[in-house]
Length: 96
Image 1 (cartoon, rainbow, N blue to C red):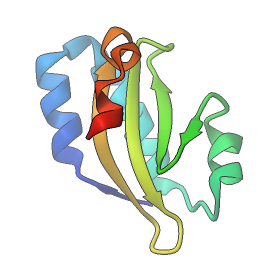
Image 2 (image 1 turned 120 degrees about the horizontal axis):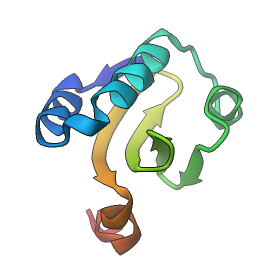
Image 3 (image 1 turned 90 degrees about the horizontal axis):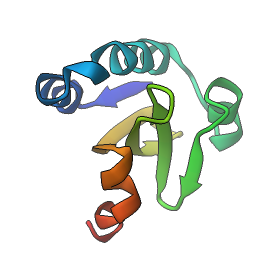
């Protein structure tokens, strides 16, 4: 899976260093993955959710959420938002 863009992860790690290890681990796993559908995602990330058109990943023991659009055909994952739990609950990400 080609992750677009690592820059979002790098910037979030700079702002929230406590998320760094969990985001690095997520990136390592996803960049090696080949998923054909959401079921494949759930086999690797059992807590992932689908909120069309987004796949929502719980990161760092549910402390953070990474919201992405996944194109299974082209094997690309577009990071749209990285949020802490409170920001995610507020739901502002749904409007963008």
